[in-house]
Length: 343
Image (cartoon, rainbow, N blue to C red; front, side):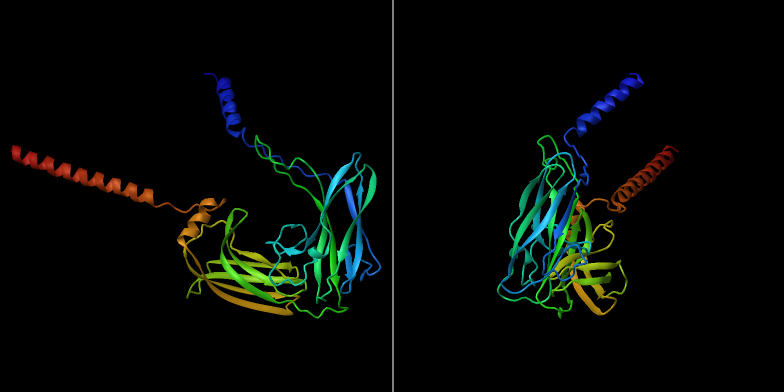
């Protein structure tokens, strides 16, 4: 078979193997912009997001403008969301299905009208209005959310012949509500739990940290390490800074690099955190266990792990050598015995 035919055969085999999976990375051109019509009860007119002073039972309209600069019409999904803290320690306004933290008393999402899908003609600006209804019962601190705007596409839908992946950009107009002129609430951190967890198909020890107060936690710095129970030796260490937490939210702080396989055992987490240039400080020490079953389950589904040395085949090879040497010794002994008998 000639080299040309070999290459053709290889190409056909690769095509057949990968025909069931189609991955398309697609980012929308930024052909639209979003802005807010700031109302009279705006606290700070120098910012571009809603920063509103409200009163119990108040109702009002909040309007944003979507400007479509493209030469064709587009649809946009406009969704009001509660602010959360994602697992990177960043305040996130895009999670429409995120579960509310157990410490949350006033859910800003429930005070806003539902998500809308609007069509904006080419080279046109269109106003989109949401209803805000503040509850009769007063709330303290800050309620934080945002209005998320993303262009609607069809490319992200799964196809029967494979899978399509799409990257999209979204605009967010922040929404901050408060009834007090000066917020008196102070950030407070709790450690809700520690466990082995998989994030983006990588294994970590995670500390679920909670901001229990209705106030943003700025300038968060975290230092952490894990030891065996009763030991001072640091097994993994992770330090991060310039993090933030939304009011009444929690997130999983990942400890480790996600490359090492998990090992079953009993461990201790040591974690300290500071916020606002060290004004607020917290320290936690918590024992936790990784079961053999959990370690195996997560290791089997993780990617990018460092390979551990597999000593099984070393023992097999050593056993083969020992058996071969024993066989050789026995053969030599038998040969010498026959030789002696023949004399």
